[in-house]
Length: 470
Image (tube, rainbow, N blue to C red; front, side, top):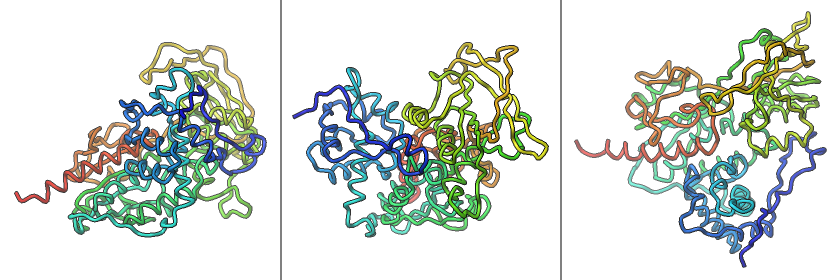
């Protein structure tokens, strides 16, 4: 029987007072009974509005119908026709503004918990699948045709997976020593366990995808060399946006000031918080995180787990916060304070060069700016000082200029993003495609994956044309 409840099944989570002291995953996942019950809330709409708002166009009613019938492996099979990383997307995608935002059930009550069900299907498969370490290489008529993928983040992995399914030989070049890009260095363990990231990447390796780590494209090799000297038929650039931005205010060079990128990389990739770490991280007693996006929430929640009293400083109101509602709620539950309508003016330090204060100014909202949000303007005579010994800047990132500066004929935006066709990822350089944060600037995992998948289809068409006799 269908479930006509207006309320979605709640996700079991760790108690806030417990989890704020550990890095274990916060959300614990649905049980079988909860998953089946939630799946029965789906109406199986014929026009599938949820699918239209999914960047990788998963057959959402199809996989949910399989869960409702208790066919969990079949649900996983449906998802992976469209998405190579379901356990990751089920955890970090902003479903509330995409697929769930279009769910008919959401008109009168809660939408179906699509993301939680995707996570359930993927986790069930990963736990029960005996063939997880078996290699299954797709068959095709492409022979040994090779495609190079730069970066093993969401867009690179999605592109590589789609090309491997089409039978291409794919090599991913990753600058760091561990695969996964932002999935490994940027998103904390308590939101996305790294064992899950590695398991999903192993699935791509089982399809024949090769990954070369410690290879900096633009330094170790160039895009031009990959095409001209190493025989790759096409290159996809999914190198992300890992260059942090700062406010250029006084005191940003003091000890105890981090970019959110560095702070999270040291925690997630280097485990700098562990006992006896060779690269220990500075543990402030009072931390101020500047910014209001998901990365700011991640940094604040990590700082809280390191024992700091944490305040998020944001220049607009709570209504304009770009972070996911779930992440904001979790941060509040864990005891993180919010200081809205506040903008930093400078960072004060002591005579030893360490942070000791943050000078701020109150703001008021004016007309909307180019982002569509109300523009904050300073409130005259409202300056004040906040005591803090650690400041984490989380105000955005941009693409590293290394690839652009070493690739002939590659056009970029003024701010550093690679110029690429929105639908195909085609760039100004013949045979070179790009997608994800390297093109758009910092965005979501699933949008990057959608770009990688679209580029794979375009690369396939490009190579097919190149193979035809002229």
